[in-house]
Length: 256
Image (cartoon, rainbow, N blue to C red; front, side, top):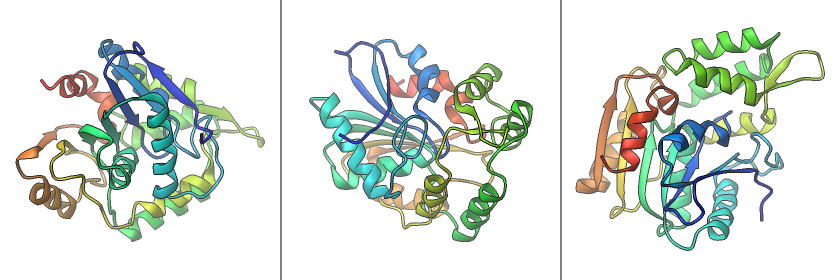
């Protein structure tokens, strides 16, 4: 099996959720949701190049899909509820393209799909130019300026405690592989794929996400392809949907 570090929550015999974090994130971000869903089993890997998982290439959606397929086959005997945030939403879509029967339901939380190449180039170059921080306070300020300012403050502090590590030059950085995350910014420029038409799908768009992650083209394609199987929700929040709206996400999972 691929060397993925996996965070597991809930009873082993409970209905299973495969939860996929965003770019530069980690699987433990789903802990706040797991607290609200004790009747579910949540499998939340650190994606390749993130957290404690392997950082070896290839760094593309095909390899991530292969990693996740191995994980699901080892952890579940049937279809799962597939839950993806941002980059994790894009990973979920590519996983379904490879295995359309893997999920019985799909929830996309402000998925980052088929984004503008020029914007992604700017983001990647900025991360290469400034890959670390002087200290924890600087990392906190960066988070607050990039979509975390409406998140639960306790979850921001948890992020700093769990995901920020010392660097060799005496600074601190997120526990990710810079080469991998740089490559993944490029993956987000790829053309979008859509889920199976018969799959019940929920799209949550964070209406204050800047820049917007859900493009009009992707949203329109989902509406056309999924038809009555699609539910679109517009939430008044920034990009870190689970960190700001954990109760609402839990209700979505329960079908409420």
